[in-house]
Image 1: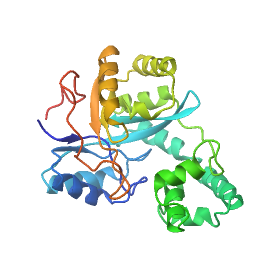
Image 2 (image 1 turned 60 degrees about the vertical axis):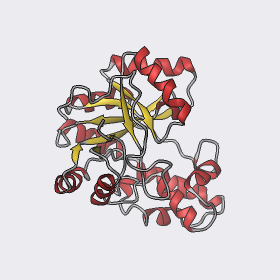
Image 3 (image 1 turned 90 degrees about the horizontal axis):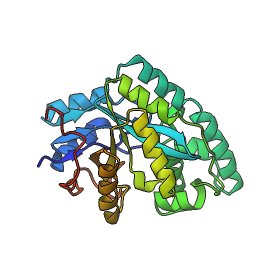
Image 4 (image 1 turned 45 degrees about the vertical axis):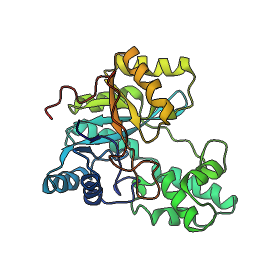
Length: 278
């Protein structure tokens, strides 16, 4: 069975490695089919594709779109997209707009909480205010020595109810799925076990996702616990959805699972790549 990893990030969003370095790591780790899925950004795809071709690594285009649903931020992965599609590009640009203003609000609140110069500090880790995210703030706070790791920063400063949390209105679920489908891609709910939804809310999310043309959910992902693998395999079958697999790798020493290190999908599910020409 090929080692397929369809979710990871580069420096074009909140990853630590350039696309070429992510490709090299995927190849070294035995990945056979790889997708780069940066947050709300497709600018890294050209470099990723070129690097993958040089390594004889099968490459799939991808993106991870931030969505506001049920008062929470939900991520929708798009696979096998045409990254030059105008509606997708315009939609992602609109989604990114507002990140800089939100980041300045976060920095102001963090200053009150005793974290100085947080905007400039976070910007060192991204370079482009259009792409600045909570992860970049977390890296700056770690650099200051205030917290030991990203999860510690989030739990102390950057989740709802904490001093550095500022909500942002992202794309709608319908918009994200339609952008992906319009670009010829397959829409996938990323790491569904990570969202703080009740069973009823999760059912509503999947129902609406399917209504708009969504096709799959991540079952085996670095953002799921081992016990959630079986839970979401059963849910994929219950809702008639295909199953995806991806590490959600952001960088060495920062991600729970490395590229290509996940177990295979359960035999009971239909892989998202079942009808791809692999």
